[in-house]
Image 1 (cartoon, helix red, strand yellow):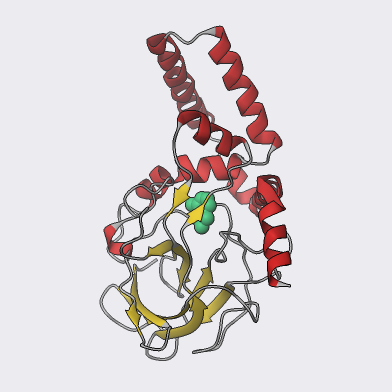
Image 2 (tube, helix red, strand yellow):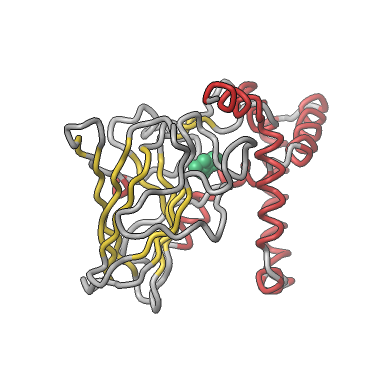
Amino acid sequence: MTDTSYSSEIAAAAAASGSSATRGFIERQSAQQLAESTDQARISRLAGRAIAALNDIIKEERLSYAEYNALKLWLIKVGEDGEWPLFLDVWVEHSVEEVASSHRQGSKGTIEGPYYVAGAPQVPFGGAIPMRPDEPGTPLTFQGRVTAVGGAPLANATIEYWTADALGFYSQFAPSIPEWNLRGTLSTDADGRFQVEAIQPAPYQIPTDGACGQLISAAGWHAWRPAHIHLKVAAAGHEPITTQLYFPGDPHNDDDIASAVKPELMLDPVDDGDGTRTATYDFVLDPA
Ligand code: MBD
Ligand code: FE
């Protein structure tokens, strides 16, 4: 059973992940967000600068018609494969996040990436993240505390948690995985503490069979991200943070394709001596 379902995951392909990520993103965009982005002068400035930058590159690099047509074909394929969320989140989002979080005193955030889903099931303190009975990987206890910048514990903070499985697939973006697999919502107790039983994630390759993979192989790049836990931490009266946590020693901590690793986001997991590990991380939230 295990082998069959995992090989069908592998066959799943970028197309499935891409179209789910694209549909999900469109659904999440509210009228409010669209309204906020209709300042004509701002649009003219930003679009004008982006177009000018591209034209400068073309002239400096003396782009050929063959290269122009290859670019055009590839851009069309990014859309057809549903990979605009993947492309943008891998190569652009880190700069947006840097700008958005530059004022913060509390814990570091990093990019959200294309595979967040709101509304993951609640997991009680010390309970297990939804997973299959034979979920592969090292069991990981993930625990810590949420406090305000001044040190006050934040009770009833929520921590949304999501990871890929050992093969690098996210539930709801690849077929044959239970809906909420390796996704859960935790809450802090009166002292701001949380604890959950999970699976240590594995290094992760972004989908290689779509337009992004085509670019990566044509350029001779690699498709790897280091193993990572995605999190969104929120508490009343505080600025929510979207972040990721990483594991020391991962071969891709220094060359994440998505440029999303920060030294402050390293976990320090300890072996429990019984084949399981425990990682502790404390989050500090800025006032809203
Ligand atoms: C991921 O799992 C991810 O976290 C990012 C940022 C981009 C692609 C896939
Ligand atoms: Fe991810």
